[in-house]
Image: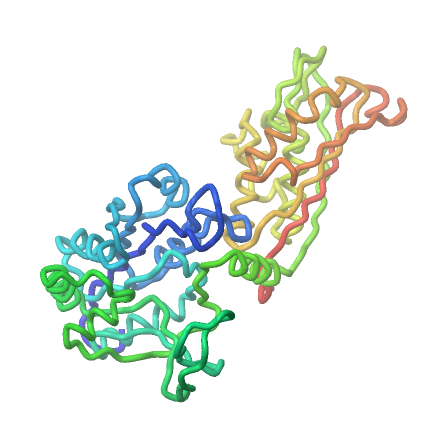
Length: 401
Ligand code: MG
């Protein structure tokens, strides 16, 4: 590090709101998906992944415990604490939970801003280390009017404000931990519970608050229009569409069932092979690896390696899916065609789709399974084995190589 001691940095993620302005949704807005991923999961990922942050303290509503577990699965987080009746009370609960860990710096961030970048978080930490209290701010580009009196449409203009002196303020807001906790305790003790951000509370407590550059992409998702806009942004950001194909063949041998797409299908023979010979999952795995230009199933799971003998092939498909996720991408579609005379695949089509979707973590609407014979021609026609052909369509972030 360039300067001073390595200081302990924590983050409070405020996710206790009810989100009523985002429309009549069945769940609060922070648990609704954006680009296929829960808003809160995106927000948590940004902070869990921030290299300087060692403690992440979520604050949630007691009613949302089950939703929260889904949003936080697999992340290294402190146990969530229950929020209060106001945003201020929720932040206070998070700060009190962090107090025993004695962080030096704390970032307060709203779950409703899922697009905070790593660079923004780094700037917040740097600014708080330099000044003790700092908030991300952007110049206001719209002309801002103060309302004078209510009228039928939206009121009358009282005055036009000088926008050069105005800033739109975001989170994460970053503070030296102990003074902010003291300010929160004092505010509560004095009956103040109406501060809408932590900077306002800090200002009230006499703490000087600095500003640093915010991010136009760090939007607060509040209305249904915000959801629509962020879906469009996600779609555009994952615009690098790639398609891969995979082919696999396994021969019949002695047995009483085959496994295709993770589904056990009774048959007069079995497929032979090194693993469980799941011709469908092997083709799909290669299709995804193909779309990533990331080798093939044999390169990642060499048949010479005894640990894959008899292995359940869902692990191969899961591995390929994780390679997509690790590059910030998403699978848009999987399409599998099985070629054989027998067993009949058609009756099992939806069971295969469901199983593949489950393994890959996709909606079933993104998984197609088709079956055909080869009109008794070739090795499949002679009943010597089964062939599978797969296509994977994936979306990667722009800027990938
Ligand atoms: Mg194979």
